[in-house]
Image 1 (spheres, rainbow, N blue to C red):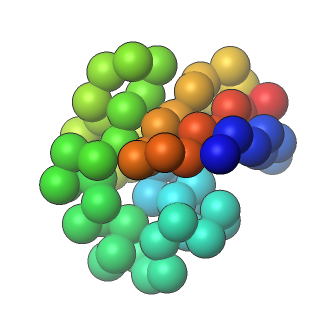
Image 2 (cartoon, rainbow, N blue to C red):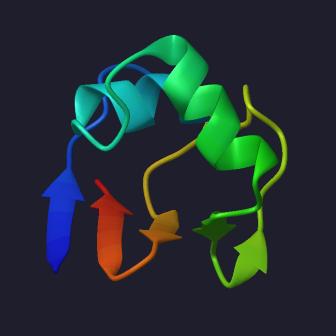
Image 3 (cartoon, helix red, strand yellow):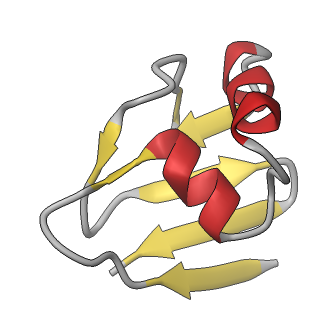
Length: 69
C-alpha cells in the first residue's frame, strides 16, 4: 500500500510521522518500530528515531510505503 503524506514546515521527525499515519499508536510504539530496524528511508534502514524527514523522502515499513510531499 502506498500513500502520500504532506508535511507541514521543513520536516517531520520519524516518530511523529509514524504516529500521524497511524502506523504506531503511541510514541513508545513508534520508538520500538524504529529501534527494531523496520523502517526503510530511501532504500536504507533508518535507526534514528528523531530523523528529520523532508519532502521527497520515501519511507517503507513492511508493505506500506509513504511518500513525503
